[in-house]
Figure 1: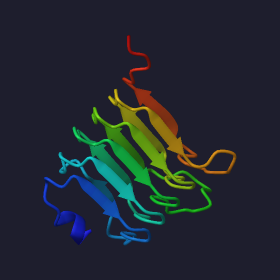
Figure 2 (figure 1 turned 180 degrees about the horizontal axis):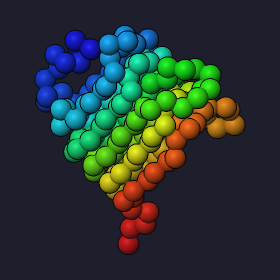
Figure 3 (figure 1 turned 135 degrees about the vertical axis):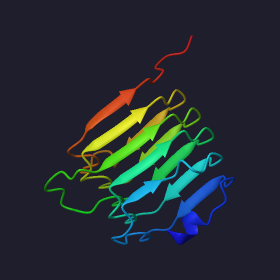
Figure 4 (figure 1 turned 30 degrees about the vertical axis):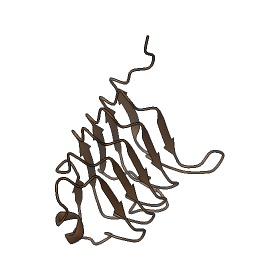
Length: 147
């Protein structure tokens, strides 16, 4: 986390390796302070104890990719936790991808004001994935068809 906090606000790419940032003291990840970031890539098995991931107002963000088993504390997904994923107001975001079992014990998934969003991939096709297993998926203000 010290490396993330040390980044300049003008950074355009954030990459977090697998098995990183799963310290119990890291409870929130708010990347809204990086207005120039275009790409966010997080490896697998990362940020296990983060209760809220907030990506809000990132005007240049184009892609988000999160590896398997990230942002998941209880791997078996036995019970929902009060954990939140918030993706809002990122007008250039085209792609949101996450691997199997990521966010499996999150109870809230909000995706709002994402007019350029073309692809949402959660888990793997024809495989158990459990992404947001206990959450209602909310898609708000998504432009479905342009004329």
